[in-house]
Image (cartoon, helix red, strand yellow):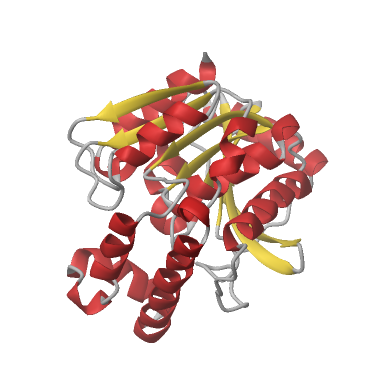
Length: 282
């Protein structure tokens, strides 16, 4: 069932949920859609805390696919957690997903406006992979609204090495069934195959920019405390990317997970969640 909640109604609902949680506060997530920048964006929301978080998923991702352990287990007494499906992804369809040259900026504007529509004036951003790029842009564009920023598996530019990695995974028929099945269940095999190929083309277009920049010039404008997490065994994001972020974002720290890969927040969810909660509550 789709639930639409305005801020005043949300506070009433949160208070009731908090009373019913009896300290444990394992509250059911709300799911709904909001009209944002001309599209209907699907989101999930859980928790009753004063510190709001927006979770920003990766390529073709959604809150449902990308952030299950975070929606379930992040501290719901301290945080209100929102995960959204960017336009053309997950349950934010239609429209079909496309990849114009500003698609990361477009997702950033959508995420920021969604949180305003939900009634959150200040909040923190957690972005994975493409969602981390989107979060970097959002934090730079709207510093007054962002409390803290956490990104992992993300990059501010596309190198020739990155381009080779992207093209190596273009053919989804060569993916493992474990990686391919959730996407095919969400999208259907044809939409997934075609949209993934369009994503590879979309991310590759940044190589035509000076130094392959996606958002390099925006990094010095990020003023909030920032945590960059990197999986040492990440096959999609070489280690020079988190190093670059840590050298160009002013108020930043870098945390490397020795056994982490690209989906470290899923594979090592408990460790990741503790790390993020400690950072956000400092």
